[in-house]
Image (cartoon, rainbow over the protein chains, first blue to last red):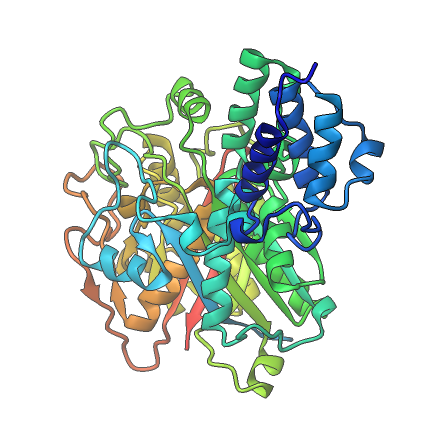
Length: 80
Length: 399
């Protein structure tokens, strides 16, 4: 499908994490979600935003595989 | 018996953020009601909470959190609990809980579909959310729950905290109430009941009163076991002398016009405190400005206090901030403590026209000094009554 560029996906994910309370300057591809204080409730919200924006449904198992911001971007880019 | 003392207070009300401004502004005759509602206009959650904390909390929980931060600071807890954490409780009442969250998610569901309901909806709307958030914020690991008894929720939370400390279950409890129900559904629902003032004026006990004015906010107190508090050298603001609670078993919304349940709760609070009506120097009334409440409360005060009811000042905080529903009992307990400590009785704002039978000293116009006669102590009761027939009365003594 590739209707969405990796940059678009990165922006949506980064903006979401910042809106959840992560420090904007700490959010980069290599940042670990736990270090950004992103927890299971944040990931549930992020999954909802990703589905709305990109039509990609993430299962609980998918989300469990995500460790870094980059993991999340790549997973969505793969399926978008 | 174990005595229970108040060592910390905090409030967010339509008169501002902070317990101090509640007493100061009310005593100056300032009314926090605008456009028929008591909104906390000065309140900006992220001035006090992190972005994450703020968005993980419905507005009612935000009020409780911010009030708790002030209360713990005023108790001198300074980021460290003075007791083993499992002996410190969190009991916070609310009438409704996160109704703003419920309404926003309900709208999202009907307009956009079920998948647009937020994962945060449940943890924000639940009625125990404020108690849980206060526990988490401060690391309180003892008993933790909400109390739900409509407009007596805040007073019942404090009463329950008194019992927990007396029973030895806890050494301290962070307790109070919070409400944020200035929402479209809540307004419509209270209007449908014909409970809200059509003029938008809160004038308790006045002949022209025509319903309550809804307000929002939160009040939190730190209660401690008296011996434990003295041992740590705490500054003691007041003694929570006693608590009395009864039910009318009369009607879902209307008070018993004979005031029997309310009078029994007042009598029980005095008995629990070991004092007589003659020992009281002030009544902080429930005083909602509804035709039925203010009449039934006056009848109840006369029945419970006899002659003394005619001799002491009776004023209503709701004249200055409106009706804070599940937060009212806690905010008004704080207002009572501050009035007794300052020995200044704030007025029932807007009271001008007497009604037959409503003939207590409602403290019209201006605050007045509280003169204590020889041997008198600064002892007062704070009344709270709720839909469902709940009556909760706290007896407080300033130190």
